[in-house]
Image 1 (tube, rainbow, N blue to C red):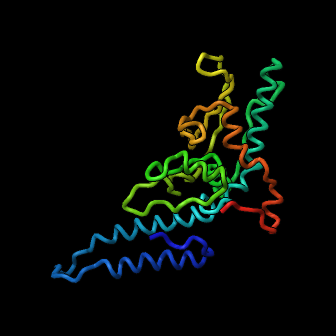
Image 2 (cartoon, rainbow, N blue to C red):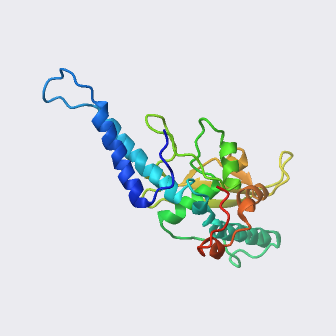
Image 3 (cartoon, rainbow, N blue to C red):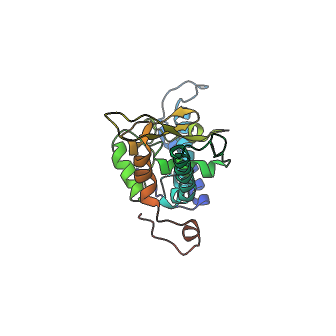
Length: 237
């Protein structure tokens, strides 16, 4: 059973350890186990504590509230605009060195994770399809909590935002082919590894026009100061 999502930070912390303690208190069946034996359920409790941490991250910085990733829209806008400028420079055949070749941004996990969610990363394959989950993001609806152990899940804070974690969005210029009329493609890498995007039919290589329309387009209407002024813009939740 999923916990109630909308708890404040302290309530969630109490709830998290309360669940783990309840499992520990109620999972051990009295028996004639010799004194000194250690119950292996302890490993399950630790696993559940990790899940609780990941669930908290999901609610406060991830898909658990659409406001989390909508705050990353200005950053995505900057990325898209920088790519458009690079395309214009390429088509105008500007001299190398006279235009920007890369743009580096440095931030904390609380910026990187919402931005990753805006791209549709770390969605689960099981149950709902990638596409359906990404459509929830486009409609700005909250997602469901990560699957509870022992089921596998992609949403793990230890692998999503470890120390020195990063996202790279690379714009490629490619010759047109019979299969594609686009000349520009975007590749997304997370911690130096290419990752498939739901918006791009689960490929990590996506036409720039498709990326702009399906990833950035649905959220283009939002303004950062409107989202954060405390008056409560519509969340879609």
